[in-house]
Amino acid sequence: MSQLAPSSDRPKLTSVQWLICIIAAIGFAFDIYELLMLPLILRPALQELIGAAPGTELFQTWLGRLFYVPAFVGGIFGLFGGYLTDRLGRRFVLTWSILLYAFSAFFAGFSTNIWMLLVLRCTTFIGVCVEFVAAVAWLAELFPNHNQRERVLGYTQAFSSIGGLLVAVANGLAIEKAASWVAIAIPAGLTGIVGTIAPEHQHEAWRYTLMSGLIPAIPLIVIRPFLPESPVWAQKKASGSLRRPSIAELFAPALRKTTIVTTIMFACSYGAAFGAIQQLPQIVPGLADVKAKAQAAVEKLKLPPDEEAAKKMKIGAQRQVEQKVASEYTKVQEIGGLLGRFLLALLAVRIASRRNLLRVFQGPGLILVPLIFYMFLRVENKTFFELNLESIYLGKLPFTTMSMAVALAGLFTVAQFSFWGNYLPLVYPVHLRGTGESFAANIGGRMFGTSFALVTAEIVSRLPDSVGPAPAKFALTSAAVAFAVYLIGSIACFFLPEPTHTDMAE
Image: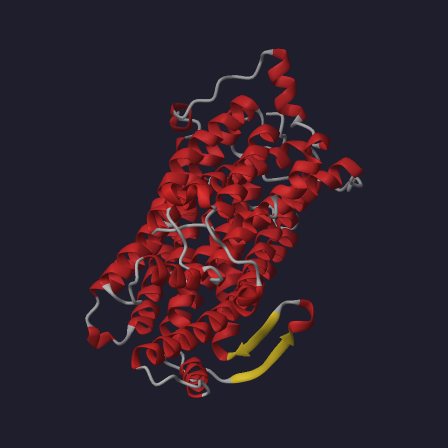
């Protein structure tokens, strides 16, 4: 089997190609922006909409549902979206998928009950699941030069981690400034249909964070007329040689191994992220230094004589500290993921074997990621320094023992997402490219992979109290889940087919 043969020429990008890269980068950034938003807003959203405290059975049940149900729905409709990408064109599906998730996220900020939030998270997830597949196929076919394609796919996907960093920044900004922003209220004519938002909840940070997902729709509406369709797809469509995509064809002898192995490995990549790394907001409150900060915030309060009112103030102050520190740790983790994506983009044109490229991240991750979560609350979380970036709206970045460990976990795990964007277009033909990518990404990654968030939540809900409080349970379970999915992925890598060509017209 021949290996990838990188070409030596490096043609310069045209103005149109730069425009393509910009819109793809925005799409990738807000793809992950939407996904990583949920762990940040879920805790306060559930406390408001269902009135349940973290760690209770009702809270854990809805925690799992809001992680998994949108992913399941997104996976099913995302597979259909991949089919439509092959039938209707890459640009058309890419545009409408971004608009769908942007407007769904905006209206989710007006949620008056838990079911409304769930439905809008499902439509958001559908848009996100379709966008990734359409964008990857579109970019791969617009850049026929191998080295240029690898770099474009690698660096535009790196903006996914910038999106993760931005959502942490947006959430931190909302937590700090929400009280002074315009109140979020349901228009009078709609209150009989969707209900109302209580006045005391019209300035909740989680609502503003959700609504910020509208941002990518604005440049897309302006830029869309200048975006070209994939020339390879358009040529085949015009000539009548474009074959009809078929899910069954993914399991024909020539593609069966590719489909099965990539689906399993994509699921493992997402399993490590959602089953472990995205549980950080549930674990961080258990750190001794975070508890001390929360207690200090409570002690500074001027409490009213009414016991119930005083209790609410204490809970609110404690919750705000926990949310803010969780946001800070998420920023550090996303910086690690960003470094991982850039590292993969650099290595993609230097390591011919796709298996060996992936193993650069799988091997260390198999050892380090489970160990990091197992030790999370067991070691002293020493603070080395804190980088204050308030002047550029990045808040504070804590450099502690565990925050730097979290950055490493992000580096080795998140880089694998970029790998699949570079790999999948090489192993499926034009008429099946969207469908094949969608099956691996949406059925494997978004549906089964994200279900490990539910697995983690379910295991936590069944652990005895002797294990410790909720953060300790989440840390231990995350370590076990990370080890399991990394081990399965590392074994499956031995069966990963090596691409035999680099021609996007095939």
